[in-house]
Length: 93
Image (cartoon, rainbow, N blue to C red):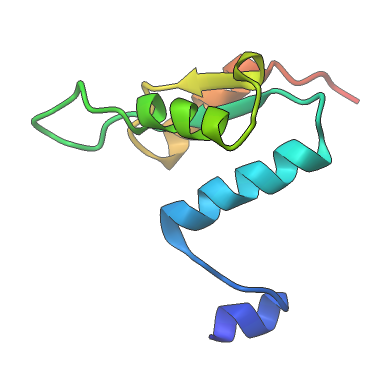
């Protein structure tokens, strides 16, 4: 409740919040690519990668498949940042 009050909107938290924000931003910026980064955090099942499950869900939420870029190697926040930076290739302003 405190987070909702601070934001003046419903705070869902966790994965659901991450996914709902993707939908909001994809509609606000209809020409932007969407990079979703989520590898495996399972020590025994490296083949289970969250990114692979998200793409069909995003497509079901009407996000065009050609806008979705998956990064499935990151295992922690640092790697998410490094790998997404490499994919995005931001230009200096």
